[in-house]
Image (cartoon, rainbow, N blue to C red; front, top):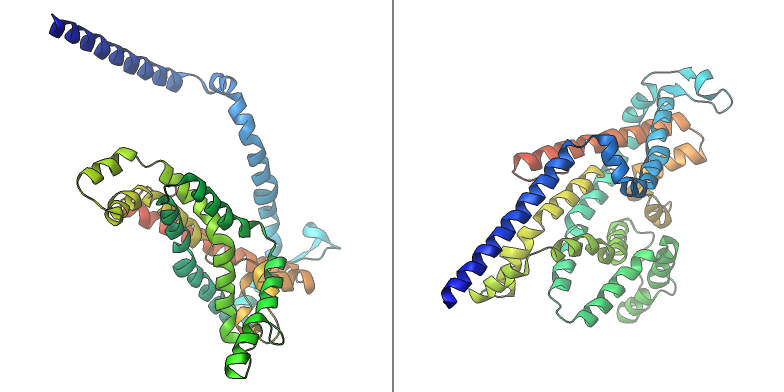
Length: 333
């Protein structure tokens, strides 16, 4: 009698599950068949939430692209775009044939590859370590501490760097002088420019960079860890066989974006650390565009350099995305 009752309950539950799946399937089919305007009317709140982002990209990202046309002119603010003389590829030829091109390319690629191979893995490693912390209160405190440097101004970061590393009374130089009797000019020395730049980047951005990877880690099925524990897997094996494969798609997406901006090293941080003594290793495309366009008024030449950067970045994104898809990954799009 009891067995018959349990069978009846199981049949009822199975029927309910089938009904829910059938209902969900019908809802999906209905959503697919519904005309766009009806769909828009039904979900207009979601579209309104996206609207500020769309306006931002149109005004500040796509409309300025139209002004890249001055890269092919001798642009004069007095004549305007319509009245300025056309010069074709002249600015591009001058840039590629100029003495600064090799130096700019070398410095930019050196800093980009340094960030790609040393800085890029740092947020992933830190996110994996934070994920292993089981005490939520302690985990929140650590996360807050590593996020804070991101919100500090680069000017303040440079001021702290100066207080620590300056040759006359910096903390590090006082220690070096006490031990060796001489000091090191960190801030004007060419060999020290890139290590200092990397240390600033790691300290300031590593914690904030973990947010995306922690969000990806939050979606990992807990049952996988429980099953691995039953099979006797330790923390290292769970991280290697469950956690890393689970966030692999996120890592690849972030890598594609990073490679796409390989010539975009940032302007403010390098400009603050730059001086006449380390210019040969610190001048990059971003600082060069600023100096040519703003301080020297060569708007067309600076636009040509910036356009070259944008084209290279686009090609890199398309290439890496294609390689990722050929390797069996989802890619960026």
